[in-house]
Image (tube, rainbow, N blue to C red):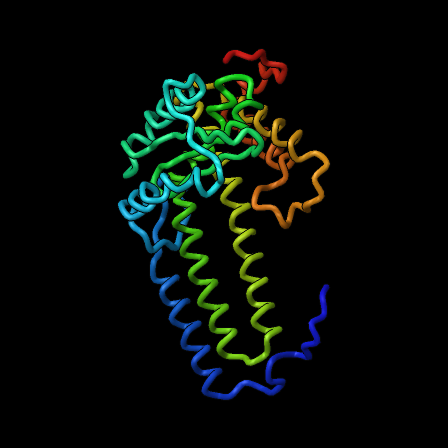
Length: 285
């Protein structure tokens, strides 16, 4: 770690009572705001702290979607491109399932293909804007696998993970600000910032696991073979093989662990599909 010559902080003394008081007030406001916005998600049945309404999420996603390609230094591929049509067709079939169709996001799910052929990724914005890169699509070999990826991202939307993480990030920032104001020691504020970042990563891993489970349900409801999600995990395993980033610093759980969890879900809900599972499926698109 680099040493810039600091010995505890800018001033080296203890914080004044007024600074501590202000810091406590900031922290208190952040905590009250966070915990006063509580609701139970109708699809995951989990209590969440969210300040945005579904309508606000939809608008946020619509406002952000046009910028995503430029933010990733790529472009969106649109019809009549064959792959773009495929992504939209599979996505809309998922969106027509019972849960998406009955949700407050009904009619707002849109599925986008990004031209980046090197990046292997898929993600969802609040309210139903869902993206997959060409780099990931080109590694899939059938529609069940594509449905697994898009079902996972659709699960993020229904579970309101973006809105939930936004509320957590706002709370975290309030606590970091409180720590910085309440202490004149640079090291205290820096440590609080790192702790906040690690907290967000932990929640994100939980969201990924929840979206895996919801994605399996959504693809099965739409008539896709839910074992396709297993092949998606194997694709991710190949991509991540040789990577040096430890799991606790990743926003996604280790693919092997996700694979184990998915097998448990399939054994419980779709045992017949799992028994006939053939991981050597032939390419069909």
